[in-house]
Amino acid sequence: VQLQASGGGLVQPGGSLRLSCAASGRTFSRGVMGWFRQASGKEREFVAAIRWYDGNIQYANSVKGRFTISRDNAKNAIRLEMNNLRPEDTAVYYCAARTGGLIVSAIGSDTQYSTWGQGTHVTVSS
Image (cartoon, rainbow, N blue to C red):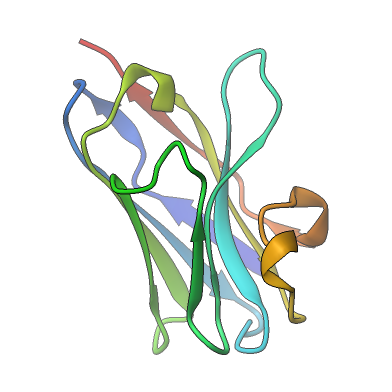
């Protein structure tokens, strides 16, 4: 099972980026897929996730209203549309997935995810 993330880069404050994550080897149709990020010198933190079987979506408070997570059932993939980016969004973004269900309150816990992508860098700077 592999998760392939793409779409990072350098953008000015206020700009937009789209991240994509495609899963290969198995589907997560009964599980959860999402994004976490880790800034330099900081712990990994939750960004957004989608519970595949019912479409429940959760966001970190810091990105609500600016980021949108969506899924592509046919491609077994998720996307993260990031708008109005801020310097504090600078981090390595990781795609993560788990095959089993998860209660809403646990969706933001990175310990609940068993499969991780390689990370893609997002830099927000003028």
